[in-house]
Length: 131
Ligand SMILES: [Zn+2]
Image (tube, rainbow, N blue to C red):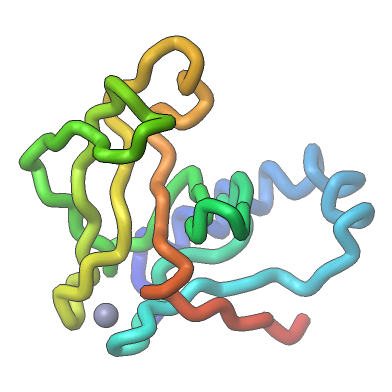
């Protein structure tokens, strides 16, 4: 189930792990895997987790697994706080469930979101990995 893109991600993660060791120790949590709530297929590990905010009902990830497909049609964000953001919609390759969107273009004040993947918490399940 964890196919090549995931393997690459964990290699990159291993390199980064050295740098992020202190950060992870501070978090003191088992890694999370994110699964599609429809299939469920793995969407990504928490290694690429950027932030999760309950008030926005979404989580931001630096990368996603190859089970996520990106619709190339670009749309303007409809959220009032995200004026000027251009988004591409994310779908699950397994069940075509709409998962969220990726930020392709952002105004300066939202620059930190550029190229981040935003997954709706309603369409994903988080799963704690036993380590
Ligand atoms: Zn799915």
